[in-house]
Image (cartoon, rainbow, N blue to C red; front, side):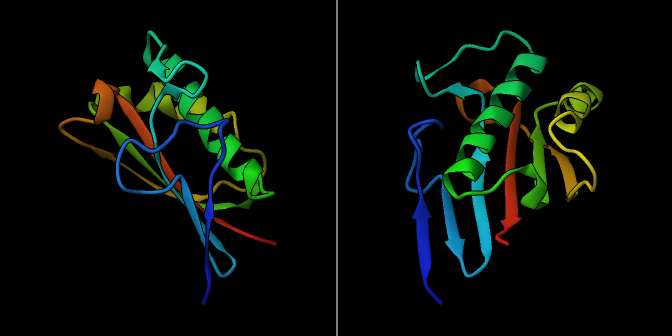
Length: 127
């Protein structure tokens, strides 16, 4: 099986030894995205709503680079620094999908890169 690296300037560059996404066969594995604005390289969001929108925009850019959209997503993982953020993140996240939602888990973690509150990774299927 071949693997193909997916990279776009419309999402933040990796801040470690990993890629934005890797395509293996008909699956696309997207690394966890945080609320880094790719235009500024900084976390510009001032609240959880803004963070979640930026994360979803970053994920959308990576999906788009692979010729996909949120309709191709089959699995997500959401990492939160505090489970009290669940309802807020869930509301924003849900606006990016129409029709069938992907499988998902949400977990609380002690900390995230850049001291953000939200990180989301995805797995998508190519048509």
